[in-house]
Length: 391
Ligand code: RFL
Ligand code: PHB
Image (cartoon, rainbow, N blue to C red; front, side, top):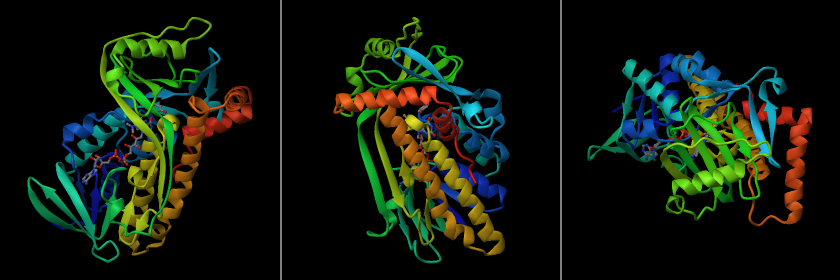
């Protein structure tokens, strides 16, 4: 098999890249380990930055998002048993975010690729990338028990944190920066209307909690738990009681309960591998970087990476000019590190570190009070949360 751009992974990064390239007249093949049903159901992100919304809309992938997504102009920080609203639009000259689940973005992109007769091969496991530093790289993959080779001009690894793409880069080329946290998130989906109009990020001595949503009928909730914890320790009643305790306010706010339809625990990590390129192999999205979810940045970074890359590949394709491709890693990493810093800051600000001293806890509360009482500090949070322009 031969294609111009071989893409490993049909997450948001791989699918959007394939779609954007198609619009520029560049053919690609996407190899995806899992089934279509699996990638369409995998519960993950829920918040699209302003720039992500614009990219999806401009590429013709925003039609259902504009009908079913829920625009949010603010978020709530809850601590000391009180609600404090951060006005996203006021702090950013009118930028906002959209509540539209990653599952829906993925479904929309797969449908668009299908309509255009794009090649997305499901249950096709990439095994290795060969010749990354030559002019004709290739991907060896296995589908239905048979091994095949996909010859390409360029390979883009969009295969997530556990993928094989990054590992194809020889030892010593990549610099890895990493941090783990003494927290994980227990996430649930529940068939109950959200108890709030905007997301609630709650800081509490018992630990962080987040109230998000998927639709007017479905709530998405998270609790900070120990990384070694398991869902077996969290029967539904215990989850609701713990959410009640962490979201409690002095004005008597109540959380609606409903049937829990999904439950999982996710560890938290910060990770960057740089540069995001080795010869004709490019890394994009979670394959190159991970952020803890508190800043809601992972999916948005994936979209920003492939938007840059699609532009650079198109420039190369139409003008035989590699300038933008050469600039890809440095340009993408500038945004990646801003998001790394913001995600780290939001995580440290809102979680309860079991090893924190009384001094640390006083600083944390002081920081929360500053952010929610200073226009300058809340505008800075709003600017980072709603997101910087994509290009
Ligand atoms: P993905 O989505 O992990 O897709 C990678 C794809 O590659 C496939 N794959 C392979 N295919 C072929 N051959 C192989 N050898 C392969 N190995 C792997 C995988 O099956 C998969 O389909 O990476 P991508 O495209 O870079 O997208 C990144 C996002 O998924 C991720 O950053 C976000 O979900 C992170 N995230 C959030 N991001 C946000 O922007 N806003 C949020 O509100 C937000 N909330 C979250 C999150 C992530 C979470 N978890 C579960 C980690 C909340 C949570 C709980
Ligand atoms: C979600 O809706 O899944 C979500 C929202 C905000 C975050 C993380 C996850 O910061």
